[in-house]
Each structure stands twice: as structure tokens, then as C-alpha cells.
Length: 587
Ligand code: ADP
Image 1: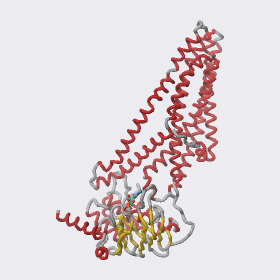
Image 2 (image 1 turned 120 degrees about the vertical axis):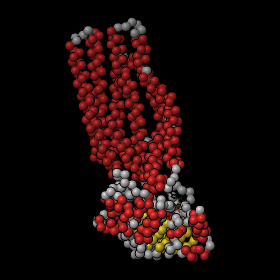
Image 3 (image 1 turned 180 degrees about the vertical axis):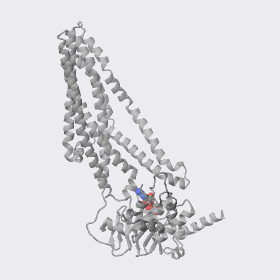
Image 4 (image 1 turned 90 degrees about the horizontal axis):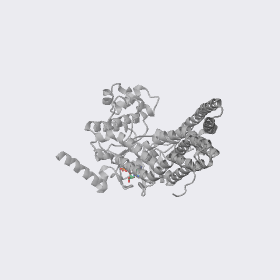
């Protein structure tokens, strides 16, 4: 295993703990004191055995016994206080981590949520912070106990008979070596692979659940979930390989630490070689009682190592989100002068992609103009639309809205200018009323109803049990993809931004829904600058201007007639489209 740089997780934890960091230190000190207090009764026990074996004053036994009981109860109480301290600190760390993450997440470009998947981000916010909380609250005091106990045990083991002590240490050393071997086998790397696999499964599971309505609506098959199955199969394979890799060192570790009794037998023969005396009986009895503690201590150390690796991995995941560059917010208070859009030599390449998704695209849209983007799948239509609202920032070139570079507009001002309805627009688990007025929180019920009417949503509202106050996703109230899109259109109608970006759905469950969505789009785009990502050419014929994209480049521009006369890509796409319609009619 290559040497990895030491990750200072405690420093990071203390930073998140802020003023509560001292509670962590106090908790650990108390845990150490409790560990020592737990060991002293074994000395009292030795005195009891000695009193009994040597026939000394038996009254002393009661004193020793009560001292032991007192120490054990005291140790327990001290440990409870230690846990109390670490729990308070742990909750503070978890809450601070979640707040920092949430503060960071809202500054991130919207595109990050596409790239990394909301499932993954949700898992980091929930699970990684929870792992940190568990580590501080439980594993840290346990680890302190696990570290202090062996030192105390060494004293106890060697203080009474060093020969027996030495023999008893042999399995402990073998166990330790097996453990060190396991840890050396790229364990941190394995832990990362394990967490990555969990992340992928979580992401895919979220997509799977979200995808169910689409799959049902569009009559797809179980093969649509191939990625989900692949990542589960991959995890199964990984887990098997990992288990097989560790089977020998783990078996060695467990055998060694559980074979300490066998070594006591050997030790008994060694010390009683010259004949057995009362001191030997005392020591052997004492060692029979104390040696299981070595097993317990070593097991605890093993588990605390594992907990630490889980924590380091969790912290690194949190770091990964914290390291994503937030969307640059401009200091300038520039406001757009009109509702035009201009792209000047815009090039964009996705993170880690090998080729540009958009290449040197320039276009100009006048205020109030209705423009359609067409082109084969993967030609860059969605990327272009997403760049306009800063899902990402351009790799080179610039985008101007109302004459101002979008990077120089505050995000608030940009969002006031532009409304977008993408295909996968989602509703949150609140009432339709709240969903629609998200963009205008003070909108009245009358305004919301008006917007819903314009977006052709009244048939949806009428069939819901509590009308616009029905909570989506509750009591079996679910909407189809087309119905959800109409509600998001109502949201955009209410927002009434002067620039609109619409992503037409690629397919609809039924013609009625399609007609209604088209009518809602038409109502929404009145008197607005409109950019429509068109997937079916029937809807673009009336556009003022059509931009044809191919492989990230803008290859043709003009209105329908002009493009048909050019005899280029648009014409061939349109002819293809007409043929497909005729074929359907013929069929
Ligand atoms: P369209 O909307 O025309 O179908 P897109 O804008 O979605 O096309 O995609 C343009 C190109 O960018 C395609 O080659 C696609 O594979 C790539 N692409 C889209 N989204 C991502 C992403 N998140 N990461 C990497 N590449 C992407």
C-alpha cells in the first residue's frame, strides 16, 4: 500500500465542535479514568483470592469486595458522565456540519445536482454527518478505553507473575500482528470503495424510485433499471472479494485472541514445574479471571480502528462538497437593460468530459422573439439552455442577458429575469398551492388559481380531494409526468418573468395531456422572449427563428421556410419527421 498523507480528523472535528471542543477532551479524560477504575477491582479480587487461599483474616474479604463494587459503580458513573460530554459535543458537531453543508449547497451551481445526483448529496448530508456523530459520541470514549485498558492490563499481567504474564502475551502479540496485517491491506482504500458503492446504490435507488412513474407512463421495461442492478451486483462482487481477502488474517486474529486460555494452561505447567504451591494456585486463578480482558481489549481496539476509518471517509466526503467552487456572485449591481439574449463564442465542456458539449456558439435573440432550438439528441440544446441560467459557467465566451454578462448579474436578478420549465421539473411534497407560489411566496389563492387556469391545470385540481390544498405525494396523490409539468408551468405563469426557457417533453402519455401542455406553453409565452427546446418539429414551425445545433455547433439558422429552402440538416430532419407521421397515419 502506498503511503497516504495522514489525515488529521481530530483537528477537523474540533473545528466543527467550536466552543464545545473541550467537552470532547473532558469526555475522553473521564473515559480514561473510568477505564483505570474498572481495572483496580481486579487487584481487589487478587487480594480476596489471596485471603482465601492463605487462610488470612476472612473479614477483610468483605472490605475488598465492597471496595471493588464501589469502584465498578464509580467507573460506570464516570463513564456515563463521559458519554454525556461526548454526546453534547457530537450533536453540536453534527449540527454545525449540516449547517455548513447546507450553507455551501445553496451557493453551488444548479448543475452540480445533476452531475453528482441528489441521492449522493443527500447521503453525505445525512449519513456522513451521522457517522461523525456516532464516532464522537460512542467510538471516541470507547477508543480511549481501548487504549488505556491494555496499558493497565500490562501492569496487572506482569505485576503478579511475570512468567505467566509473558506466556499470556504471546497470543495477544500474534493477534496484534494479524490485525496490523489486515490494516495494512489498503484498508482505508477499501473503506472508500465500500462507501462509494453505498453512495452509488443510494443514488441509483433514488433515481429508480423517481423513475418508476416515467417507466410506467412510457411503458418501459425492467431493463431501464440496468444501472441499479449493475451497481448492486458490483457491490456483491466487491463484498465477496473483500471477505475472501481478509479471511486468513481475520481467522488468525480471532483464533489468537480467543486462545489465551490455552496459553494459561501452558503457563500453569511452566510455573508449577517444581511442584504446586499456594502462591501458584493464587496466580493461576487470578490469571484465569484477568486474561479474558485481553481478548475484550484487543477486539475493542480492532473495532475502534474500523470506526476511525469510517469517520475519515465520512469527513472526506463532506470535504468534497465543501471544496466544490460556489457560483461566483458578482459584486456589481448591474441590471439588464432589456430582455434580449446574446451568446458570444460560447464553448462549454462538462467536468471530466473529453470533448466540448458546445463549441464556439454565437447567437442573438431579440426581446420578445420566440426561438426554437432543434438538433439531434446530444447536440447541446439542453446544455445551451442550462448555461443561460448558470447551471454552470461557460468554459469560454460570454452570455449576455439584457446586455449584461450573466456572471455580473446577481443570482436574484437573473432568476427574476428568467423562468425555466425543464422536462424533469419536480414538485415538492407540499400542497399544489404552495408548490405554485414557491416563486412568489406572498401570492394569494386567487392569483394561484388564475395561474393554474392559464396553465390548463383545472382538470387536475378538480379531481384532487382537497383541490389546490391537496398535498402531493400524500395519501396516494401522485401526478403523471405531463400533469407535473403543467403545475410547474403554472408556477412559471405566476412568476411572470420576461424570459422563458421551455423544454418540451420528448413523449406524452396521452394526446389530451400533450394538447393541454402545448396550450399552457402558448399562454405562458405570450409577450415573452422564448427559447424552446423542441423535440418534435411540429411545434417549431411557428417560431420566429430556429437555431439548428449539431454536435455542439450552431449549423443553421432561420425561420421554417428559410431553413427548408436551405436543404440542410433541418430539412432532412423535417422530411424524416413528416415521413414518420405519414407512416403512423398509414399504419
Ligand atoms: P441535447 O439536449 O441536445 O440532447 P445535451 O445538451 O443534453 O444535448 O448534451 C450535449 C452533450 O453533452 C452530449 O454529448 C452529452 O453526452 C453531454 N452531456 C450532457 N450532460 C452531461 C453531463 N452532466 N456530464 C457530461 N457530459 C454531459
